[in-house]
Structures are given as structure tokens and as C-alpha cells.
Amino acid sequence: MKYYSTNKQAPLASLEEAVIKGLAGDKGLYMPEYIRPLDKELISRLKDKSFHEIACMVAQAFFGEDIEPEMLDAIVRDTLSFDTPVVPVRDNIYSLELFHGPTLAFKDVGGRFMARLSGYFIKKKGLKQVNVLVATSGDTGSAVANGFLGVPGIRVYVLYPKGKVSPIQECQFTTLGQNITALEVDGTFDDCQALVKSAFMDKELNRHITLTSANSINVARFLPQSFYYFNAYAQLDKAGKADELVVSVPSGNFGNITAGLFAHRMGLPIKRFVAANNRNDVFLEYLRTGVYTPRPSVATIANAMDVGDPSNFARILDLYGKNGDQHAEISQLISACRFTDEEIEATMKQVYNETGYVLDPHGACGYQALIENKLAPEETGLFLETAHPAKFKETVDKILDTDIGIPAKLKAFMQGEKQSIGMKKDFGTFKSYLLAQ
Ligand SMILES: *Cc1c(COP(=O)(O)O)cnc(C)c1O
Image (cartoon, rainbow, N blue to C red):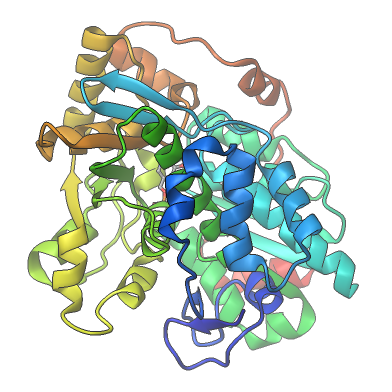
């Protein structure tokens, strides 16, 4: 399968090129040339299959031409060493808990898959050292760093905004050592992302070192996220709840929801999607006005969604409007909601007091977006609980006035020693640093 760039100005790429390059030469995002639909009969039988079987089927549709089945099976098995259960919260609203992986956030799925796939290509092709650059607003860094930890031939640089990630998030990528380097950038997440993008565009830098991106722009990171949409459907179908499914996705860079849109395009019967945002609501504005206007991000308590220029928006545009009105098509399938910190807090309190379920600030946006959507009685709402609440323990404890405890996996990270290198937000400094490595 070949991959084209959303900007259509770069040559088609193989899977290996798309994974190793990350971003296309024309700054576009890679898209698979075609999306193979799964037949209806197969979808109706998903409920009898295991997560592993489901994931292999979906992986086969995307990567089957480029990787031998046994290898793909092993990569999927290694990636999904944990479950993504669907848990009832109230009435017809369910939580898809994506936080049972090593770093307790959904990004473990993409991070682990991408690390294994890159490792496979590096070994098979005997590539020299590959340097992974990843900008993080909190959770990406830990998922990618932990995914790649100890993978031979790979060095990871995690760029994160100083003082803008929680201490618990920070320790998950600054304490690892080995092939992982944490760079503490004097700026915002958008500054970190801009540094990464500039590095890929810099000809001199790219002559000297092989760079790749592990942000959700990378096809190996965002596509595997479609696995758990199929698995969630299977679980709900088993319970007789999948006929009119509305899926709400807490969104920042829009990689997660884009994976859901791919699943939908493959034939997964999702009635509609809701993009749940914090105050960074450029997507909502696009739906309202038809005009996309990126702007600087603002800091919120759902900080993994503090994104002012969501990179995967380009993919959403590319998916729709081939035969008609793009904005109308997108608005018909996806709606959007935005919440202030106060609204997020109120939701967390209310759900905790009424049901006992602990939402993290991101999941709270997803949940509340379903409430605002006023589901019809026959509809089932599913929101993606994208991170374990303990990742935001200080915030969550304070809002709920309780002590939610810390899972053992997280405690282990907190015992490590923080090692990070300060970095200015200007590209010149970053470039010199990389060239000196
Ligand atoms: C990354 C992240 C998001 C946003 O996901 P995107 O794919 O960037 O839209 C939401 N919640 C949490 C907890 C995250 O870590």
C-alpha cells in the first residue's frame, strides 16, 4: 500500500518511508491510498472475536500488503498487552477505558505499535540510528518514550513545555534514561511542535541525521488507534447496545477521533461522532463558520488537549468532500462541544457524586459532550476515557475532595530520578543541539 500526502505535492511513499519520515516532504500528512472496507457479515461477527483477533483483522487491512502476517500478528500481540474495556457509567452512557496500558493513557496503543513497527523496519533494512522527535503536551511523551524504551537503533527526544505538564506526567518520560532524552522547552506545546516540524524541514539537519516523528501525524501511531473502536463496538454489540452508537472523543490533535473516522469509513456502524474540546475549540469554530482558523493554545486542566492547531485536521479534510460539500459532510457526521475548566470540574463532581465513577478532566469533556448532545432513547453514548484519573491526581483529588490513590504502575515511575535538558524555543539552538549529538 502506498501513502500520499494531504498536500499532494510530495511523491507517494511506501509504509516504511511514511513511518520513518513521519511528515511528508511538502509538510502534508500521509494517508493510505485506499481504505479497505470490512464486509458487513464480518462486522456482525466481531462480538464473537477477541481483541487480538479484531485488531489483527484491522491491521491486516492497512498493513497486510507490507508486513508478513506472522510478524504483524506478533506486533499486534506485543502492542495490546492490556485490555480496553467498555464500562457502564449511567443510563445509556458508557466509558471506553483506554488507560490500562503501561503509561495509563490511550496513547500507549499507538506508541507501542509504532515502536515495534519502526524497530522491525530498522532491523530488516539495517538502517543507521533513527532519531525520534516527539513534542508532548503531557501524555504523548510518556507513551512514545515507554514504547521505544530499549528498542535498538532508536534514540528518542521528548520535547515538552516547561511547567505545563503535571509532575506525574513528567516523571513518566524524564526518569527512563537509556535511549530516551527529555528536553524541557521554555515555551508552550505549540512551540515544541513547531520545533519538531522545523527540524523535519531543515535540509542540513536531515543530511546529517535520520529524523522521524512519533506525534500522531505518524501513520503507525494514529492508525492502530482504530483497533479499539472496533473492539468497543464488539463489546457493545454483545450487550445489544451497538445499533445507534454515538461516540464522543476528547480531542487535542484529533488523531484519536481521526482513527475513529477511519474505522467508520471501513464500515464500522457508528452513527455519529462528537469532538469534545476544552477552551481550545478551533474545530467547533470550523463547524460553525466553515473557516478553519488556528490560534495559540490556552492552558486548561485537560492539558493533553491544549492544542490550538490540531495537526490531524488536515486528515479529516482529506477524508471528506471528494464528491460534494466538505463542510456539510463533516458537520453531518461530527459535532463539537467545548468546556471551560469550571464546566469540566462541575461534570467530574456531579458524575462522582451521583455514580461513584471517577472521570479524569479529558474523559469529563467526552462524557459531558454526550449529555449536551441529548441522546435519543434508542441511542447509546460511548465516550473515550483517554487517561487514568491518577495521571492528574492533584487536580482530581482537589475537585472531588478525595484521595483516588495511585496505581502501582504509576508509583514505579515516580520513584525514578528526573533527568532533563533545558532548551530554548528558537530553532537555531535546538538544531545545534541535535547536530552536536
Ligand atoms: C492526547 C490526549 C488527548 C487528545 O488526543 P488527540 O489524538 O491528540 O486528539 C486526549 N486525552 C488525553 C488524556 C490525551 O493524552
